[in-house]
Image 1 (tube, rainbow, N blue to C red):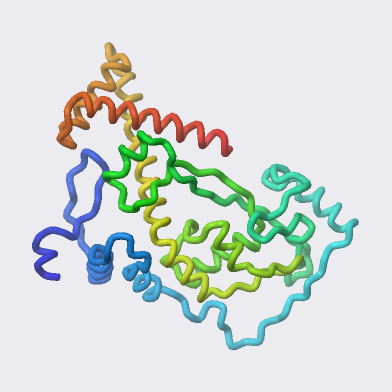
Image 2: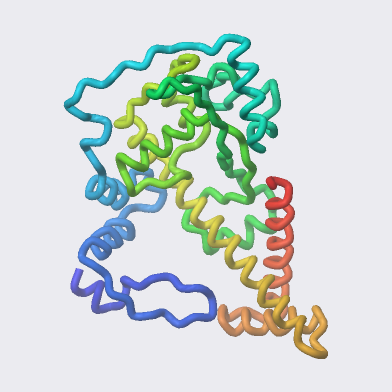
Amino acid sequence: MAYRIASGKHTREVILGESVPELFMSDRDIILSSFYEARGAGDRLRISDLIDARSISNDTAGHSTKKRRVTKSIAPTDEEFSRLDEQFLAKRIWREAGPDWTCPCCDRNKKEICRKSNRDNWTAGINRFTIFIDETDIESLKRRQHSARSSKIIGGERGTLICHDCRNVVAELQRRAPGFNEYSLTVDNIRTLVDQPAPNAPHVIDFDLAKTVVLENAELEEAIEDYVRHKSISEHFEIELLKLETLPNIPRSEAVRILGYEYSKEHGVSLEDGDAQIEWYLSEARRFSEQYKSRH
């Protein structure tokens, strides 16, 4: 461990063009980083994540010694649901779902996701959820493979609408194990964990199984991190291009050449390859912008 620290192997990644800062690392950071680097490529059991999640998990969450109040499953009458539906139509996402919507995780419809709160009020909700799509473009795969940490390459994302009880599975998992995030579970994962959903009632979830499922998603989470970083770099070059184009006598072609030169110098590639890489990043930034508009 001392040799690795002295060799400067425990550094943080920085944005392109910035020097690597000397940052303090706690004992916990050093240990987790060591486990992460030591594990074999493609190892789906993320030892570092397991230790991290275990060190900060709240084992008492969901295990109160007090006797829990059992909520009865009560369905709204047709008249009650008609009033609720009219009330919830004020929410954009409820309108967007449409009258024939069913949750892709639990297959319940709008009436079946309605349930009474402890205060005897009807409650229901629909939430946005992100689905990540594998990259299929040959050029993008070729350009991204050399820097990707995961063998899985994500090329885009789309949104879907899930019920509040299914979204709460993710939120409750994060509460019990703060090391996890909103992308730790997929729609298929939630569908499996929900298993036998009951209408007008909260889901009963085995959260020990949920934690195991998350650890098995190690490759997916790495691919998502790569994807987010790729988006950030693409948008960075688009912003830099816009800045250069505001200068006098700097047309777009010259701005690209300037960015291509800086990229070539930074990465040790030819000027032609640098220009081509910048053009590709800019095309990716445009694609991400269109993707965002289609989702909103």
